[in-house]
Image 1 (cartoon, helix red, strand yellow):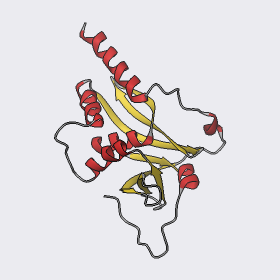
Image 2 (cartoon, rainbow, N blue to C red; image 1 turned 30 degrees about the vertical axis):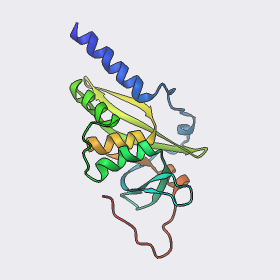
Image 3 (cartoon, rainbow, N blue to C red; image 1 turned 180 degrees about the horizontal axis):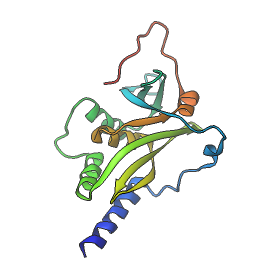
Length: 178
């Protein structure tokens, strides 16, 4: 009875994590050139002075290209806490998910930010459960919040850097990942 219950709970957690989103589109992946990725560091969570919206800044570890991604206030808190070494007094949603994963012997292997189109970033979360890998569609902000807590790599496809990169302001030094 424990095994069917465990499978049902894993399926429920995965469904919640995926947010009911449909499987990611593969049409952009059908190009002849294979996608290449690089690990990215999270430089900061800041507030864009023009829009007053939280923004996360990522930098490729291989070539130091950067891009910024607008996120919601709750997601900014979910990312800033582990980024700054802060442990909240009560678990945030991402902490809860990792606790559930741990208790169900599910591990987070990596997250991949794989596309940027129509001003929207797309990501996948790669999990391993019972020796089988599962790939789930996720919002990049949630994927990053989970990866920071699990100390899993955040990978970004080069085409995301190509489409979303912003050069640093003139004379502004590049910050290193925290």
